[in-house]
Image (cartoon, rainbow, N blue to C red):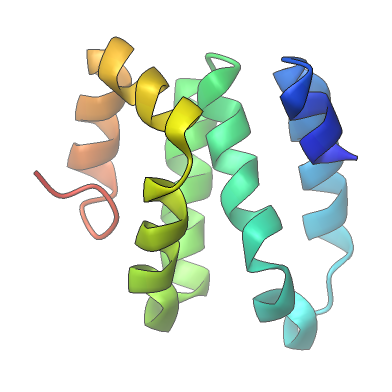
Length: 105
């Protein structure tokens, strides 16, 4: 459902859906839903929620430290998110500064 909202450009609703999913996931099942964990901060960024995006990306690295390269790969495939990063230099700088494990120069 979050992806559907995201595809429609309703990023705030997408954030709500991903937040709901993540909050209900038992710890042992979390790696199976890695995509949802990545989609949450991406949707936050698209919604202009910079602080929340940084917070969720940071939490993502903390929660899945062994999956950083996989998360980077997922992020690189998100072309609309890459366009947001290219257009919003403050967001890009903020992510590089606060989440260097995912957003290196």
